[in-house]
Length: 178
Image (cartoon, rainbow, N blue to C red; front, side, top):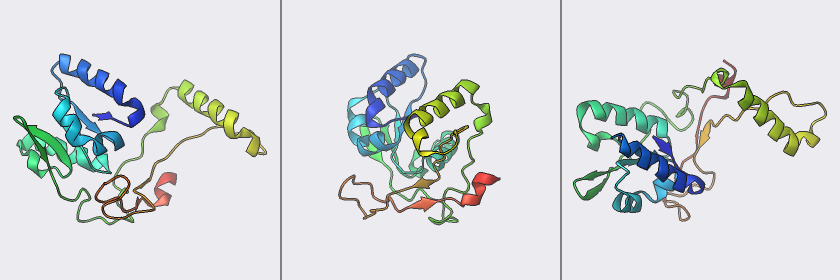
């Protein structure tokens, strides 16, 4: 899968084209793909699928199951082609056993110990250049942890971005420390 924001759309298409050259299936996700899903599917034959939901981790689990069963209609928020017809699946992306207060608890945290040391050093240096002046002691390391999804100005559907459901979703903050 390729995560697509407006700022990396052109590069994402280059990656998709390279993937198609080796007969890979290409699925896009994230904000730009979500908002432009139908148009992308109509204009870009190198794209096979778009996950147009807010929590891609759930969508990719459902997509993986559908690859085994062959039933793409069971993947909520999936946009795909049946021949030349673009299909947009409806349905809720959050499993019925969850609610917005624990929707992200089942998504594992990234094991950042697997990152090369240079990634940590660059992130810390960049942080210190911008924000270091606000600290009384040197910052030894930084990490970004995205455990909130949605929009604090939620309206269904949103008048700005037109996503059907951006209700805020969270994770238990104690999971970070485990």
